[in-house]
Image 1 (cartoon, rainbow, N blue to C red):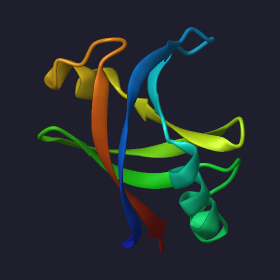
Image 2 (image 1 turned 90 degrees about the horizontal axis):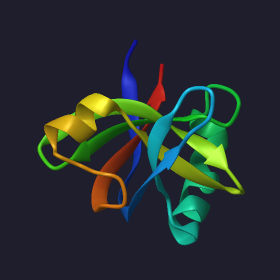
Image 3 (image 1 turned 180 degrees about the vertical axis):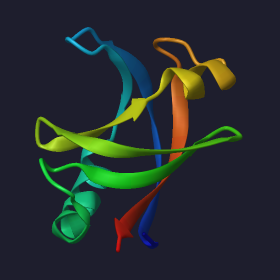
Length: 103
């Protein structure tokens, strides 16, 4: 399966924790950038509004999917990424995202 790069964004936000049935740490995509993502969402989503991305936080690269939430998007940060970059709850981080379309 190949991936085509559709858009690149740099997102800065505070790390927060969701204590749901599967706890995760997230960064919220600001509204203006969420609007940009919505413009390409129909082309790239693979269901449930999930948007596939390649991310970079510090020197750590990872793949994930943006989750739709409250009319915007949130970036899940895996434990491995947070541990490698020494990221804690409430830290303000910058994540470089490349939205991809899988073929």
